[in-house]
Picture: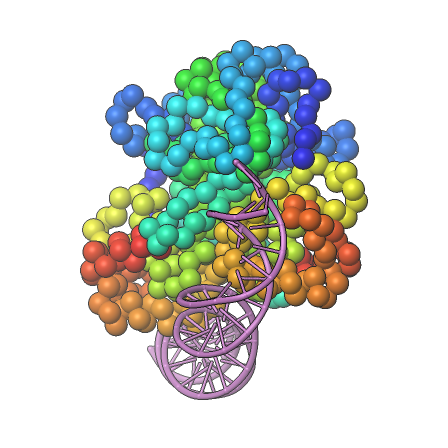
Length: 239
Length: 239
DNA sequence: CGTCATTTTGAGGTATTTCAACGAAGGTGG
DNA sequence: CCACCTTCGTTGAAATACCTCAAAATGACG
């Protein structure tokens, strides 16, 4: 789960929305200068497991960049239900607010660290550093696509299909796996259920089905192994 | 549906993610200088109803800004189903690509116009105009939130609830209504169904129910009137 | 005014949700 | 180190809501 950048400075990572001439899906990284620029603005924060970074409705004073670990961004609904809007991993951005208020609550799902950047100073810097700002633009664009992908997941009928798609998304968006075919799952099952829009029971039944079919296999509570990649891919894409 | 800016130059509109001192939900607008800057880069395009702006998978050479009318961004799935990812109105941005390819197809749902901006020149300009770029950042952030809201809509169980939420979204995101309590619906019912993740039949039954309950009333094919705002709001928010 | 697409209506099938209860796991304190 | 407790995950059975298929009615457009 730890995929740190060379130095302990903030970094952003995103697929550029323009084609790069320097080869395929190359990721854009910040230059050292930019990382230091961000570092001077930011405070490194350690958050214990289940620690809350901010709550929905609170004044949005800062933007955050996940440095290490994982967070979930969620919202509790009047009905008592909870919707997870996103899972956040290293280099992900969070805290984008609406009219000065946070729209979601963000909580660490494991001991994590993040950078906290005061909005005021960040916008001031961005206003004169277009190059740095461009990275933020790429990053937010990336998160927009991610969010659209999530809509597709939720739109699926089949529970097993949603889960396959979710795993697919985790596999593609994060670091190349340490162990091939093994996907780390730092979050709880019910968090996943809340993310893909299923009840915990339906989630459980669907994973049970996938396991019985020999498509996946859980390795402990926080990892899945893909046993039958062909059927797994087909499930995730057939839609 | 026409909410043009004073001049015929491109404009962006978004709720700022920082609190404004100049009062509540004020929208950020481009300065005249910035609009002209964009105008020199862009080509104004008239698109007839059902005209395709670009297709998914095609090379993403340009970014677009909706000037007038309305578009839908959608994706046809292997299963033959279609998912509408977003409806785009005046000042909305579209054409953000992934690795140089468009991810959705965009089609006008009425005679519309948009600005076409070559990616290359846009990024070149953004790199030296941080202020302009900041507007794009706000805008993309705005669309990210919109997309998250859509996930919430799709996540709802009740068809009537999804529709209420959808109408709520249209009502809040677009221009103040010409006629109070009347929401224009430029898109077809099945487009809406594809957006909220329902079959056309379920959509029809749900709107029928809402109508029978005296909550809404269709005025022609392209407008709804809210008859019972209290129950309508409750439906959209109870979730 | 005719044709075609969209929308509506009907009946049956199927998936998930719900409610309830059991089992397992993790954390805490004695 | 063990016992307790709380949270999370699983399983079962019934209910609900949407989906599918098929066909009629409405509406749009040339």
